[in-house]
Length: 132
Image 1 (cartoon, rainbow, N blue to C red):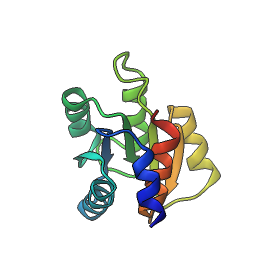
Image 2 (cartoon, one colour):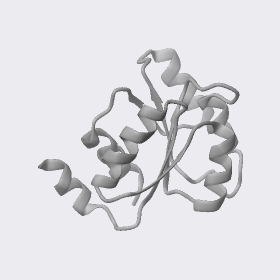
Image 3 (cartoon, rainbow, N blue to C red):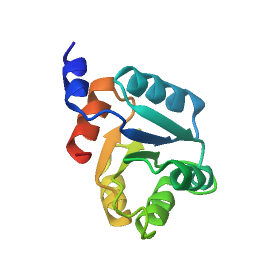
């Protein structure tokens, strides 16, 4: 399978953070990425995520745009405005594929936008592009 080859080229021990209020999305992404060989951490919202980011120092963060309390844009801004975390690539996850959502994500500091539903190959390719 092509995904295995892509994953094999990625350094071992890459830490990936998934922030999404949907337990189904978190578990799906976690299973796909663990199968590809990544260390995966999850959070159900932006507040929980900041605690996990502080403790685990992920190499890349995927964050859902639409979340209660602290949405993905606000979470991205918190990460990018923190001197210890601003270097971490943030990838926005959304079922919306609109230009406005992509532009708003860029303004917040995100590196890329991935549409849901996503595949293992898509996630692995994004990680390979941003984590060296």
